[in-house]
Length: 398
Image (tube, rainbow, N blue to C red):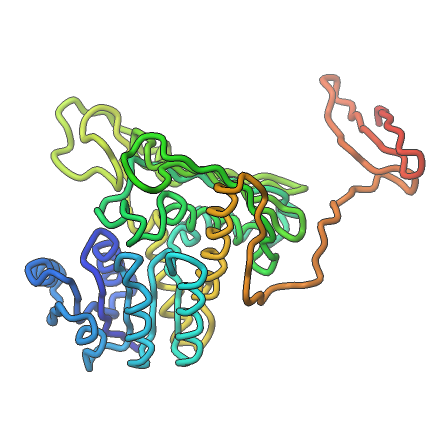
């Protein structure tokens, strides 16, 4: 079986999670080189994960002659430079979220990898969580009917590195950091071949002394009439809240990924260390996560990336997906400022064009639509009907 040697760009929390997963998920792929702007941090990281080569020059790390895969776990403002260098080296490129700081930056990166002809993957881990993958399978099998509405919530006390808080480096605030997750989850539920057409968004800086938003709520409307809602916060207290819902004409799915997942404990003396990502305390009621990299989707994500690469197929998430997400986020920022619905401007659309927003009507008989049916306390069934010609509503027990 083929194995891969990887250059890891970045030694922060995301680089740690990525390396932890890569060294354990298939057992044969290894991080062979690591880049950090700090020599001390590079060496410490390499010693911790038994990585033979360290670099403080990004170009040298990418050009390591023994590696064939570049994993980008860098601050947002360094993604384009890393993608440009890796594409020139002809290596596989796997980039963390968001792809760019804006649509323009993401589009340039998409063009770079496609012109170079290199394999590219967009590391959107939260669409790969075990619960999300199972939920998506149910949606794709038709168990929920036509998806009408989705809701994703990601809230925690704020990001772990200083650069996130500087919009010049990150590209924004909570929308660019967490909105990218929620938007792509919604796209997967509704269908990535359905075009996002417009956005209504509110954002504000409610708590933090920063030049970016720390809270936001948005609605993304799709060409088929579906709505995807997101709720984002950098000021939520009590850990990390990750929840998703999808509702269709025939059913509903709700998932809770981090808090209230069935593992709860109380301690008066503390755990003596790390509990889970964004946990604020090690005492009192705690919500540990059994296998964090697995529950957050990293295991399935990297398995998909490497298996797709070896088969010569597209992964579930690639740079085009990252580009679409950046375009939606740009519309979010425009809407929050204009306080109006704003269009999603996509220079390239690769999905369906034969889509309209016509509702999915259920027929009761040749003369009536079925509005609703419910079971009465005595066991009988009542139906609410609408006459197709007159438009009048009626009810009867059947």
